[in-house]
Image 1 (cartoon, rainbow, N blue to C red):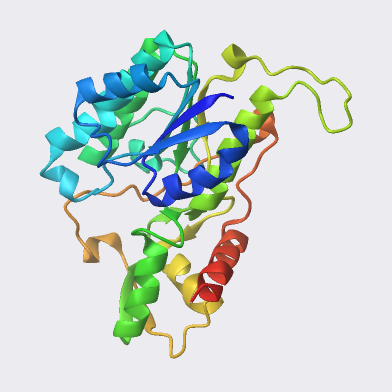
Image 2 (cartoon, helix red, strand yellow):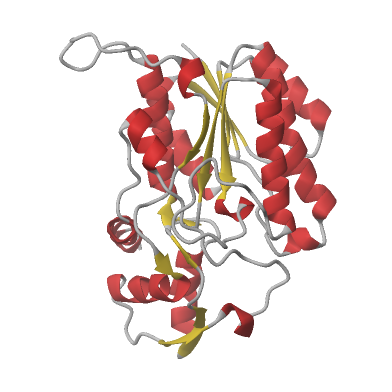
Length: 303
């Protein structure tokens, strides 16, 4: 049975991946207390000990604003560690799955970004994530880099949970209206990741009719993986309040980014095209609002 080494098991995406990847192999799942990605020797030791056939890196330094003052730590985890993972994975002839971000782009483009668009990160976090991508590619390892955006889920720290909490505490909320993107459910990311791996492993479909084998070298690379559609943060907040039936709902004040300055600059356009993912694997992240509704249904039922 193939071994799958999953890093970042305690994060919102890692939690989902533990469940979606189970049918595909034996999962060895670690969190930051079990493997510190800022320690290169520890990374090498774990991979040589486990000898996985698939490495899934859902771990990252994600404190976007704090990264502006912790650039060295952010680079160690987001920029250097992925390269070490890639080096060790290549020695084992293993596949590496890694997650990146819309923040590698500056947001100045009109329309959705495609995988080959020129990166130009505006903040330290984006620069470290871009460095991680580049380090992986430089090794020549078979890999999938999935760039995603505006990730949320029923656990962890994310915009959805923050809005639901603040709705109970405040009568009005000021929400940025000039940044657009596609809110993406972490469960959808995990499910698509598992389906990509399943397609790579399969040689026949359910009807036992032979189909063209997907060659790893042909499909290895970078893919955008987000929900379909786009919305502003203000629109996302409004959808949360409506679909969660928050009563009484706080007044949502629409403001520009300049009225809510943060240490790290954000791209105004975070919309990523999923065309490559659909073309190669016939997979889609689904409509963002439909996914949000499903996520909220599960979240509210669990309370």
